Length: 301
Image 1: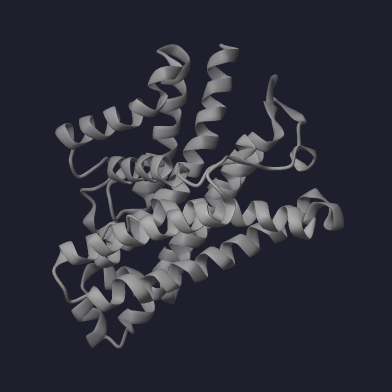
Image 2: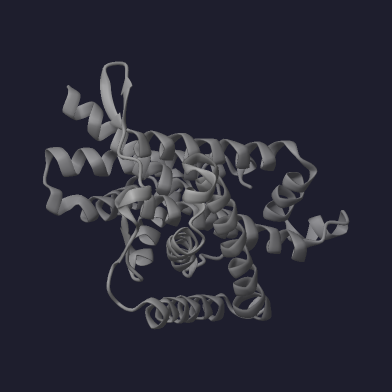
């Protein structure tokens, strides 16, 4: 039973990371009906920027672990959000009226460019987060000893997901995003600046993806310039599982996929860890192509 609960908490932590990345996919698709194939690379940039800022500014030494990580999270979110805005302006906006395939090709080109830029700057080897700043303590949660970092990742990811959901559902800006997702033409007639809405989506999605990259670095202690492809595809699977274009669906899909992957690796075979996500993708496309929550069109962002 203890092994099951350990894998469950591990799955929730990894699933929270998948969910944060999936939110970027689902927000962009909800507004533009476009899959941002460069989103996984923005996630990777978050991991590398976090490592660079952590080692060069020594935030945890100067401010303490809690405040230092909070400042680090805000800095990573800001920097990756700017990268997302640049990506939208350079790779997607000029092709908005072009055939859909043009935007897909542009997204793939942007992904290759971002990935190879990281390789040129940092090299092809794994980059390691400093061991001395990673908390090794464990918490006693109802008799179950869980690593502190795992608990922090679950709490932080769920907190950010809830905050985004409330922002989308309860604010005027969120209402503008939902209106643009339903009908851009009608949104323009209502006085909504659709270009600004799209830009905001490309700020929010990459910001969350960047934090997810930082979480991976802090959780596993090492990052690689190609990891965005695997995490991006798994997060895309999570978005499909929950219902692409549906924010609650991305949250549920990410957490569910993380738990399925963790339990599958523990009780089936660790060799199947990465394959499990794609088996889930195939099954959901066959059984329920709209995803678990995909039928509720009115709840799309």
